[in-house]
Length: 231
Image (cartoon, rainbow, N blue to C red; front, top):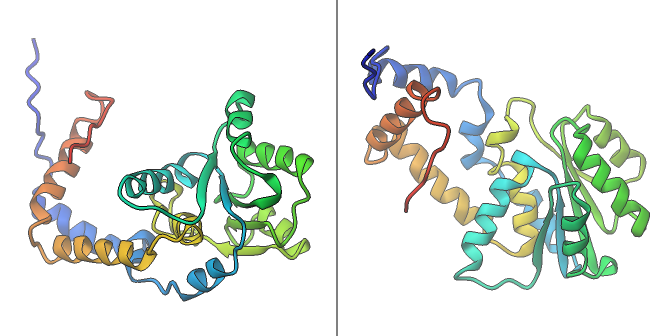
């Protein structure tokens, strides 16, 4: 029987750390904690609808939903946030029963602008209510078809940089736009991100647990198919 230990030391933690520092120059999400949020906050103030509905799947909704539901346990907000992230008609109709379509602002999120599930849900919503610049916001890449649609219909668009992967976009406009609309303090969120970022790259208290966790996940990705977080 072949022995398989938990950690396969391919490179030292120091080598991995140096690679991460080099990667910071090219990968967009490392810089997200330091972005200017003024445009997002000013725009969020103009949204008058009671209900905010995110139309998106995967990285376009899951991170935002996790933050919102976590904060909702100890905070109350003037607006409600809903998520349409599946083409299942039962799920869609269940959510729509809870909202007034005429008092709803839709945030359509797709990095590529062609995500079939997202576009399908968006088209269905458009068959129920008139979609226009007063009740819709688009989040997508600059050259996407969704952005072209928004431009044609004079709908506000927030551009997601191409060097930010969808799975790592929660602290980009993908997450910050709907969270700000609800009334969440997005600057406070980013301040927390800054502290973790600086602690890690200055090899402070977060360095050791993060580097060990990252190594474990990479070296055992073919052995374990689930990652459980404890807090």
